[in-house]
Length: 105
Length: 105
DNA sequence: AATGTATTTTAGTATTTGCTAAAATACTTA
DNA sequence: TAAGTATTTTAGCAAATACTAAAATACATT
Image (tube, rainbow over all chains, first blue to last red; front, side):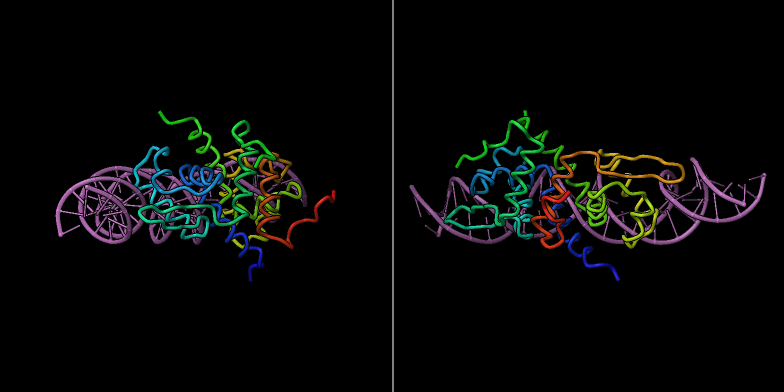
């Protein structure tokens, strides 16, 4: 029987796979400064709304993002504090100069 | 023209994709305590040597792991400090209790 | 050179993923 | 209710991924 760490690795790998995509990674980065609605997200990404919607679905279906409807619009945000920490760490390590200044509100 | 952050996101997403696999994630975790040879790695993973070799190749080809031949054997290790930091952070966040004690050598 | 151990490569196949384009749904306002 | 804006879903296809099983390579020892 496989040791239990295999199950944990499977879960974590699955989570990583969901953000391991250029557009989805940009989406999560954009949302790390606060929630945004679908239109505000798809604008800067350079692809169709339909495509962005598909990625947003992948992220919400798997618990990375939360979804809130407000009238005509749908707002998305990061739903798990661990994900926020991960994104902050990744930006610090791999995108120096683009990281929001530390210790600022 | 796409803003430059897209290029950065692409590179980082690619790196993430390489570790976003159960076996490869376990491999990287195993190696965070020091380099090991292919046989020592494939043993606990519960799959064939051929398969592990394929995953090791993916990781080395993309700069995640380093490779060192010593006679009959081939030793692998994590080649980038940022990857070590990422793995440590992921274990701390997602595998509490299985994380090596902090502040220990 | 012959055998054994360690590792890698190849070929073939099944599954998953990501895109585009079009149609459908949801809600608001005139 | 009709028209407009915001978002989602569907269908279809092309490409990437991951596995298995088998063959090939590399080095060490006898």
